[in-house]
Image (cartoon, rainbow, N blue to C red; front, side, top):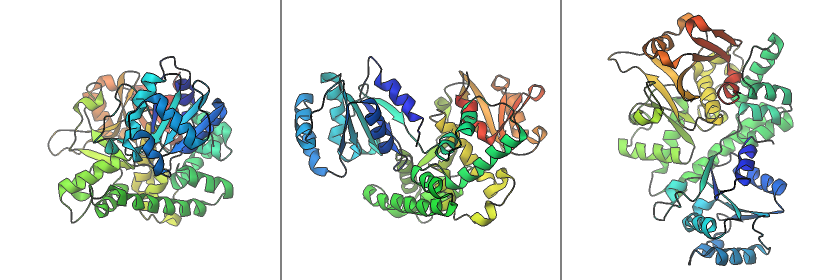
Length: 435
């Protein structure tokens, strides 16, 4: 499967002042496969050190963290010579050995020619009691497959090219094909194993079975987080987040029978694990959006749209038959899709706008930063005249124009209303594919 992260890995590989690279992301999003495949294509050899499967290898990082000594021991365990400048050293599941995270600093300082990539989840959680090598590593986020990658995996390469480019109006037949592709992606999702199951068989049910397995695997992982966090609380929070996508929520609403501090701790941990993404309320008045964003006012997304629909127990036979994609699961699936595509396009943090005025219900789904300016994003069907909250935002903050409306309608620019209508499939291209 072709993953766009390869372009960023190539950029890292060729940097003059390269540092060890830490690839972060939720479990099962394809980190290991992508890195190993990249290593095989770009280096003479790739040496994989899986610190979760081989806990006895932790002893390599237990003593003095001297790069030459660590490499010598790794060569013994791997039964292979590691050639700096020619080989890739890949340390997988590095969170299971916090001392290995600290060791990245010494690879950078004492062996700068060595290409080192580490991957893992819950890294911040794992490094509470050790020194994190701030300033001596680089970071790269990896999520599930975006819609364009899904199209590539299902032999729709030309459609993937259209999706990755800046949006423009497409012929009705092409528009219909792409919208049908979005429908399938909404239910299959972007977890590589789910996409592979669907691509190989063409059957949605095969993907649904994998989704159930992945959700169960996440839940089994919760046992590893105890006693720091209650696993039953984590399970309740995950299910509640899936059901509340698109709606502002409170910690108290995410789990019954647990205190707010316990729920918050569980929610924060799921965010650290990249299983849940917090979307905070912010003001469009200036950048960075996160500077004044609220910690109390928030919405949330799940890591993947396919896992979301599974967690919600959606009646697939009913929801899949709906002709309007914006109506599926009361619009929540469309808002998850747009948020997921925004993240894939490089929006590392997501925000939305909720008017501060008392008794006001005005809300715009997302705020994005494009070319150094704030741009509002609404996920909605219907005519421009019905977008009351978006019009109010543009009137209050005129420098934010134009606003983007992602819907089922074809691409259209409405300069008189300071709006750009983009089909749902155009999110990635609109945010990332600009020339």
